[in-house]
Length: 440
Image (spheres, helix red, strand yellow):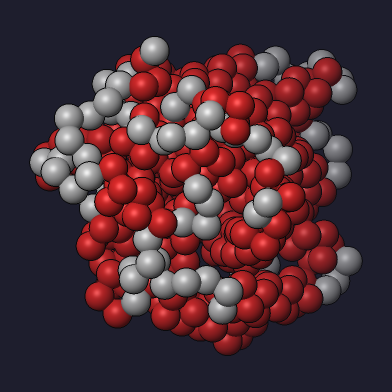
């Protein structure tokens, strides 16, 4: 079976070059998955009018944000199906399948005709549901794969690479947006230019599908002494590991809302509230994401030295304190340089969560339900909080209570703090490496 290729040696004996190749291959799909996922958010400022011609700009963006949120509803289903598949057939096999699904969804968006009444947005919804299934399964499999593949003393550092590829995909989508804004007229972007990123994403997905076929399966999975019938049992998450599952949901609710607020909704805040032009807002976001790209591995590297749990607590506490004043200041800023430095503050704090998110969640579950345990509660929380960040923010602005969303973000960070108190420090206590020690 292709999903059970055994690498020579365990994590402890694997060469650095081989480990690097496997980890980068395991996380490469994140780049494509999130390039396609965020291309929708970045280019919504253009295709929202094509699919929803009625109403003003806020109403159009609200409609496309609603479909963005619906895509998140599919993520728990994708997490369940692909998480179960990863725990039964292998992490590598599930990762290969998830990127193939994303290819199909992106190609569909690139080809959807507009002007067909309700049929056009209905087809857009179907494509987003397909992408949601893909992304829902991607995170659990890739987070589990990297957590099981990384060396113990560098697990925070390698965990951060999940968000390097994730943010890299988002950054690439924004860079493509800026490029197209320079070479195409605004009318061309409204008419057909918005289709280009989805076609690009489909091609990139094919490349990553080929790369992922060459990575190795983790030794945790291939040598797990668990009966086949016990692998990937979804109900076990709620009957045998209920507190672990609630903890993953709480961490994700806080971190996910923060991430989508400061990396996705920020663009709309700059345009809709601060009054920046679309190109200027895109440029500010590009510089912010280009800076943020390097922060999660650095935060993980620091956490490997000062403590994983301590770093996560500092991340959530800092975000709880700064969210309201920072978002309020950004919404009234007039200078793009000022907006950049304001936006950088919460991203610096957020990197503590992003750098450690994968290993904290993976460490809560044994190998036979690990991918499922990371994926399902994560996807449920993202569907509720991450996927609705833009929708909630735009709705509250529309009814004249924009600052209420800022307080909501701050409040959710307190939930993250409470959840972190339940965690053991994964720098000192590693369930995954206890598994390897038993094998060796």
